[in-house]
Image 1 (cartoon, rainbow, N blue to C red):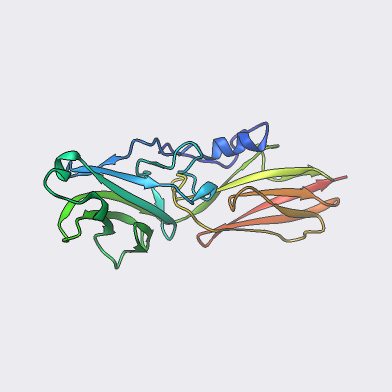
Image 2 (image 1 turned 60 degrees about the horizontal axis):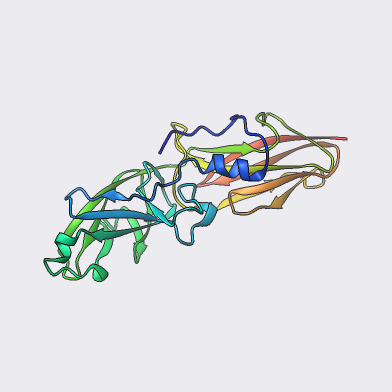
Length: 235
């Protein structure tokens, strides 16, 4: 996953352009080889939609992202190589689970990392035999990246009355890397009479609509971290 520092990056054109840029950390669909060499782990995107920046509409699964947000929801599955199936392993009974339930939570292959650092996910047979494993990196959310379709400058975001600016948000770690995983995003205008928040295609996308001339602040919150954007609405 390439490093992404979203704030201030020039983006023009439609909402689709913004979404495409925001989803630049998308998985490739190839999967990640297990470290024992017995199969492939897949990062599943089914049901995640645009709430996970590692997922796109082009593929339902891919390789393990470089960094996953702590407390974000994600799904990992495993497919053994034919050599393992030939030994009698039932591929349909394989389960993926964390090496430590004290550091991760989840059921049926859907997980949440409870702390930052390196985590191991293990593929086991129905008899409890370890078939393979893979490491994933959990990172705390330290910032909120934003992309805008009408302006690269969000300090402040300037809007005429009656115009909508579309924003796409992403959770970032302390190094400015965009983090994978499905999370809830909170959006709030401190004065909706000046600028209101309009629903978008996902929890990561919202429209900021200029209601009346004035100044207000829009807050975007994810993973306990809030970013404020000053909005100036002009007549």
